[in-house]
Length: 297
Image (tube, rainbow, N blue to C red; front, side, top):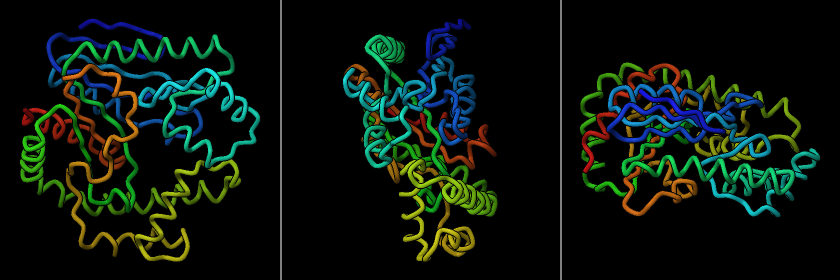
């Protein structure tokens, strides 16, 4: 095995095989939700099974601290303008949310912008050396993601083979899914309580809009009038839902601007793994992802 250290990321190379990539595995700094926690663990376990490369980001995705490799480079002017706003503490969270949906960083000056752009381009140049790429992410365990332990989406792979491979994995692991459902539901309720607590103790002008949007959506899904009623309503909501592996149930890859840097013909599989599965059963998550990959054409 060869290990190469680059500014912003590390590459582990064991020879022939696909490239497993974790664009959001860098430091969280603010809280654990600022990174795709355990994505590096799952991708690493997969890489040990398949060989190939493991490309791990060690840059924070918080825009003024690092680089979100799965977003697009901003212009130097836009990056400087947003950096000034963020550093001032007077952030319009709606505006910042829209910026983060598209752009990879903010930067204080042109030299800093050039440095980040150089690192960003080097990361994607390394990923692009392989024609088969699997990007591993972490998604929250919430009512919105309740049907999905893992949600996958792809480009370059045959769609029928992806659906067939996922169906085969679901049949094989059906007993496991039943076994873990109670823990999955309990984890979801506790994690919603955690996020609601974060929102309640954080001034509104400093609360990331993605958390507020999600809680509002969950209230509507569960038919409750206040966030505090969400945790106790999850058990009943989950009665008819049996979580499994899904295809494009939640994520469609529409804001995966970074992966658009790859050459035509590159086969890409993206996997969003629930925080529950990532924390409790990373080995099982890696097993299922490798099985899915093995069934693709």
